[in-house]
Amino acid sequence: MTFDFPTQLMRIAAMVFLAGNAAAQQIPGWEDRWGTPQRALQGCDPQVVREFWRQNAALLKNPSDEDALVNRAVAAQRLARTSRYEMFLTWLAAKDLEKAIHLDPKDFAAWHNYGDVNYASGDDWMHHNHANALRALDAFNHAIALNPKSPRSYLGRGWVYYTLNDRVHANADFQKALQLDPSLRANMLKEIGNIDERHRQEDAARGTVQRMASYFVEKNAHTQEQCAKYICYWTQGECRCSNALNPGQE
Image 1 (spheres, rainbow, N blue to C red):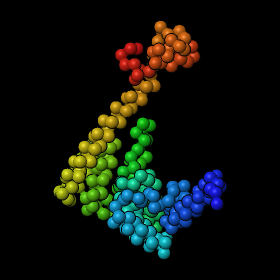
Image 2: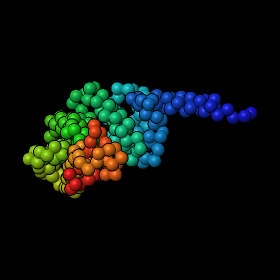
Image 3: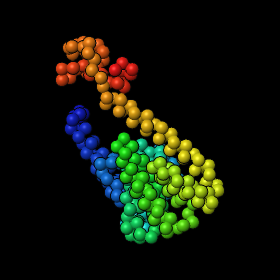
Image 4: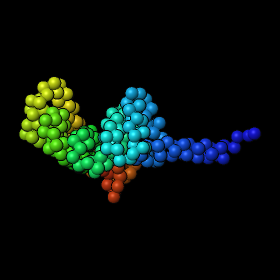
């Protein structure tokens, strides 16, 4: 029997799709377009993977099992840190927690972890979009209202405030967190350092983008060929040069 490449390839692709679709159906909330869950979990901590599947089995029996929703979300969030499919696992965790909160608006663990998920997701710094940070802030507010003695909720909210450059509220939350649990100091300082570094990188990147968007006109170039010698861009009858690529020449 000869190997008919196009036909065999289509058959193999169909088998892979069906296998992926079947696997996805075994995980409530998993979308087919994400690929197979097995690939997403490949290379992750085996113990956390087992916990993920254990909580998933509980959800297959009862999709409204509130504890299983929260626990699978926690496992998914931990797996996201080492998975190549971080975005999908984080999305799954967020949806599990949103469902848990819908089932019980007074679920402290769901609110706290929802704050964690949104904070860890970061924001669209380029466009000053802080939607995730604001959702995290709201979630931590709910968590603290439900459990005013949760040091990690104050710590998480403090990091959000610090990210938003609200140092007054951030410091107040840091002090409260350490008052409740002094052992959190090392984690607190480490993440503050990470936030400071992200702020520096964001400011530098934003400045680079702004310089890339600005340009000067090279007056000595009168044709496209002459403009190319300056490594610039000929458009609308003039030679435009990026300030970022040609610093100090404008």
